[in-house]
Image (cartoon, rainbow, N blue to C red):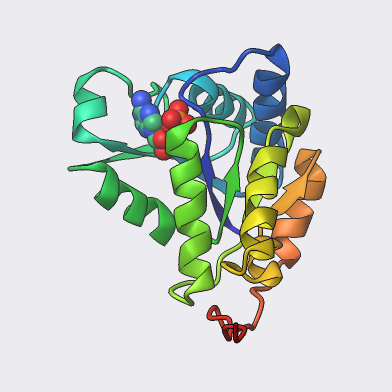
Length: 193
Ligand code: AMP
């Protein structure tokens, strides 16, 4: 892994543990000499992880939209920054620059990015792993939703298990580096009723 795109909240969350884990992940990414690509904002966990990777001498690339840039959200001191016209083109660029993806806790924006990255792997548009740092078991409900979709015949277990879930940055980066996409057809043969 030479370049990882991180999705995470533009808020810091209710517990200081979220920011502590974001800092630890930023440090570990920089120490491993991996380039950090992210939303370019100084807000929430995004600003926290960018700060910690930069402080450790890491390379941090921000990919931000024109609107958020003009609202003054851009993190100062980034290694490089690209401003794209909208969220869609920005996500495509963040994906292009990634060897794999990591999610920290977040809200709608984070969930949407995680699900899109997994969907593109499921369809074979790319073969990139998606890993989440499971601070305070934040991602347990998302895994429950996946398990529900598997039980109800809308998703293969192999695809639900694509989401790598780890408790520490070191284990997360190791698992993402070793991950291989499942070779399984997305479409499930319907049971006859
Ligand atoms: P949310 O989880 O709803 O806070 O949204 C965070 C995710 O959406 C991040 O991973 C970003 O890629 C994107 N995003 C949301 N707000 C911003 C912002 N102010 N600046 C840059 N990206 C943002």
